[in-house]
Length: 83
Length: 174
Image 1: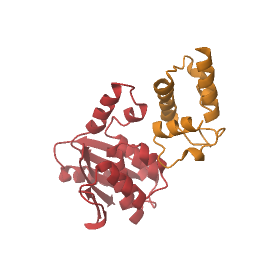
Image 2: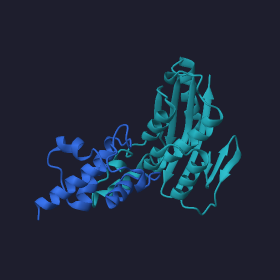
Image 3: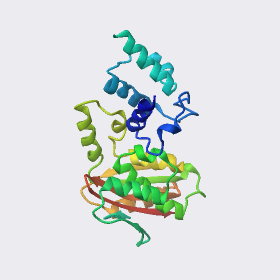
Image 4: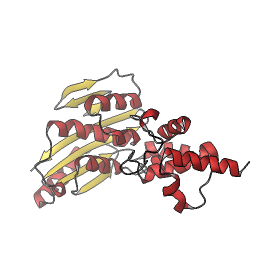
């Protein structure tokens, strides 16, 4: 998850945030890390760029992008599905 | 005023870095020196960063806090509109279009960033012209003040294209 946190920081240009500042289960939006709707789009780009994952159902977004752990779980499940 | 890696307030240099420092580094250093505590700054394009910093320099010194949000206007102008960011966005399309860049492909977004920071909700306009026409901007500003549309205005020139930039910002009050 450390790699994923570093990728999120780079993709979203969170220059004042360090990977260790982001808890595995910290909500990424609203009261947690405070990300916004443009950040959500950048996270979708991150999944496509780094993991070649396209989100087929946009309604899954809030569940997938809830926290670093939920994104990691989604990536892992996707990779296992494609093995 | 911001030019040649120097920040001026009332014609006095209040902060500077070496002239050969690249613009992104200058902007980051200026943010750290003048403000900090506003992480969204790092997501802005160069045009918004320049306008935001200039507004910060003026309003920290002389805030518009005695005016209602609807009574503060913004009148800005520049030569290149958002072309600097448009080209960066065009480059990003070759791989993955960047949503974060796309939102800055309008020149007037800089006014949105300043408004969000300071809570301004008044009249605003962004002009694009070859040169800084101070008379036009001042006449427009005076007209707004005379009509009572606003009681205070931030107005001026916020230009950036590549490594070339210049900001001239005035505070006008009734």
